[in-house]
Length: 246
Ligand code: BGC
Image (cartoon, rainbow, N blue to C red; front, side, top):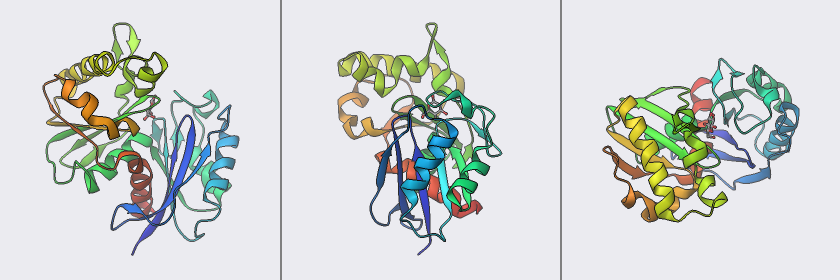
């Protein structure tokens, strides 16, 4: 069995597990730590170190992070401290964790897992994965190959960031009905459709567990399906990336 550690860094939690790369599932318990506030590089690296402390030392670590990541450098910081922008994240995690690390965008990680083990398995053409959580993450695939670092959660709709209108957090924050929230999400998907014309849109994030409450309300043109790995996808995908590149 090949194994790697997956870490999913989010605005509110840092989650990690050892992953069985062949099965695409956790090999043991998942751990969760609150994201330190402010989520500065030093504080996040220290919490990630604590989160994986009990996991085998010889396994490589994949780290999904909520930002565009270019060659290990963090380029954006929508839900973390602005001190991450321009910060050599991959290097800092390797140093802080004392292990080999591969850092990638969190939605890209979730998409990789979903394409390999979940709803996207065997799907050709253009597939768009959206993760609906604190923000909206995106991962774009052509014939199963990832186009990294798409940031479709930040397209502008009616003068606002798409994610501030339609992320899952918006529904809770403004106590929207499923109908009201689905209409906002629908508009975001329609706009994205005009930009990338996906064959299939896969909706992930914790809210995908309640897919029956909102997917039937969506009217956008593409086929729209719920992710299958739900909140395991980010961790599984990050571990897969680590096992491939390290
Ligand atoms: C970030 C993305 C991230 C998404 C989900 C967005 O605000 O810009 O990089 O994938 O949130 O966490």
